[in-house]
Image (cartoon, rainbow, N blue to C red; front, side):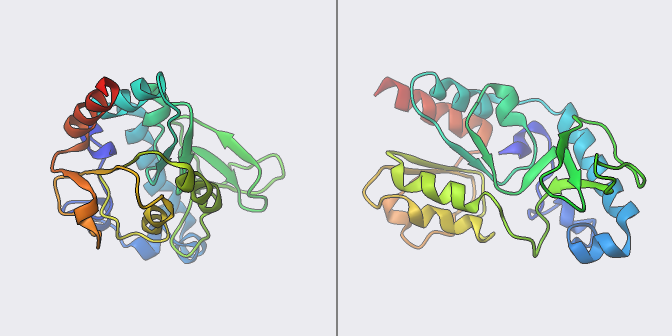
Length: 217
């Protein structure tokens, strides 16, 4: 979803992991080995996300919320959905604009696009770290997201490879009979793709087109 706002994806060709060793910047082991490098990596990501702007797809979802009960479950760690006007957003993998104490994960603060360095601490004296879910860590909002899907009347999947678990498994919680759409120029990794409507377009183009169709019905 965020790629059309100019933010690099992680897994695609030319994505972030091609320039970084995931074990060094997105694991607890990497943090213990070289926290300065991890902070630098996320400081750069945070600045880019802060300077990015929501695109037509983000705004279309916010527009849909004006008429319907919309729940957005995102693997993205930026706040472009919120900045576009969406108010019900569940972040599975955390939020770049927030940091938390290494000793108390409930001590979270919003820093916008600011940097954090070694020596920057939370109110409990613990070093601040990015409020993101690293590989090997639990996904705290999975249970919350899993409770939303069974209540869905329509399911829209936008711009994801559907290969990152446990997030990819969330589609299995949705009712089998509801209309399901996937917006992505690539072929999705879905076994029962015949039951989906696949719009082979990028998020910024396909999302507004689908939302306009839904609002006309």
